[in-house]
Length: 491
Ligand code: PNW
Image (cartoon, rainbow, N blue to C red; front, side):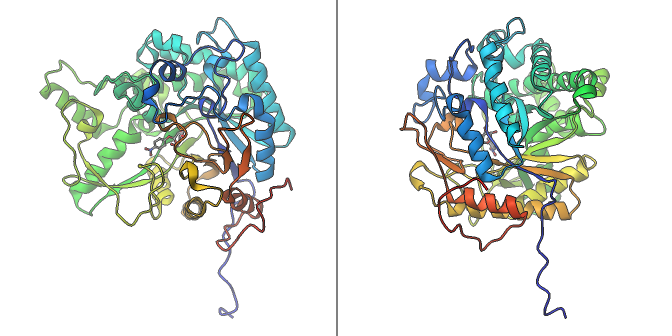
């Protein structure tokens, strides 16, 4: 009898949310449409264009501001359950502060959301995906002790405006990229370069701002609107290079520095910053001659306020790295997060690499990351809010490497479901090609190709779009599936 039974097909649950993700500055364009205010990305790319690899910017990019109906048509072609996108703060509040709301900005998002809802697509909205109003940066941005207040004001306006229709809220996208890359270093706007200081100051203000928005939502909006509010953190997998105790501890320190800084205050039992890393930073700070730790602390009241302030854990997952206490290390000359963590990072040569240097295809990548979160943080509800693969601009529409990455990721997500992870959805990055930050248009993540030479910004499905569509429709990963043509329809 067993010879006759085929291996049971593993299915995604019917209520599992399949979607794609994008971000405002990367797709919208319309950088100064109507009364939109300037953001830190507008300022940086205009005043210092050479920081972007191909000297480009997001002024027009995929021009979703004028193409949103086509975007929703693509969502329907793919058969998406959900769509994750972000709001541009300075499109809604041109000054950043809550004294003036832009009617045109609000109308744009109302149209976009209503168009999705018309076709049964669930909007999942990120309040902040890196495009801070420049006026707030002029006042210190995430370094200012006033930041949590500005952010709560903005969040309340957004919940009030869109919360009747939006039931999935994400406060911040990727605190590490905001705080480390933008404030400690120069690899994202606003390039503050306050190395060894900026990341920790920003982390505390960001986490406090998140908690204020969460409590505002739970107290004053959720009772009538009935939605959920979480945060998205980039959780790549960092495992030990060997089984040695030293490497295991090194991997733990690395996880604390990469995402524990932001996850621990919100999701852990104890609250506050991760213990081993805080101790290390405190000790190093004194050795370096600082009068106190470069990492601030949370008071007991602050800890209690932040702890548990998320209905779900949004995970952006792309890659894995093997961490060593002694090998593969770099020299650091100034205090920095990397110097504080002080471990080596290694990627085996047989893990395929994408067009982005940091993006690799590793075995069990999602399974490892999600089971770790499950065990560490008492089985939170998890959404994978980004996962995807980059190719080069000339690579065309047949993207077999991307397909192989998506299939492997989704197999790993099924393994995580089998392991009891409370995983509720998966958003592919990205619906379409877009402005890839410092890399400009030199790296492409889209299921749809966008022609950036064409004023109409024509979108064309890649082969991966057909494969993803088939997975969403059947809830099964068929590794043999080949699209019969490259003509897309709405089913
Ligand atoms: C994400 N890493 O950033 C962002 O949320 C997107 O806006 C971006 O376009 C996308 O990934 C692709 O880059 C990441 O080092 C930046 O693993 C760095 C990493 C992961 C995600």
